[in-house]
Image (cartoon, rainbow, N blue to C red):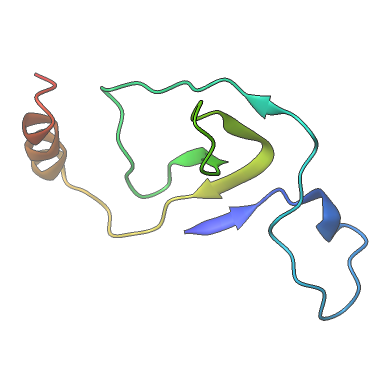
Length: 82
């Protein structure tokens, strides 16, 4: 995973830990059962909040091996999306 969007990173001092910055609001959950993570997908990060709301600024890019059409079809079948 490649993560970005920490607003504290813009003016960070060398050696300062990053990745926990926040803009003070969350985005309501947009969970869609027919979508799944595959290489190249851009997604919004979430913390452990009970509403499953997404971060107002943190995002990530999914890494991994490219999937063939057959592998995507198999994943959809496992998820019962057909």
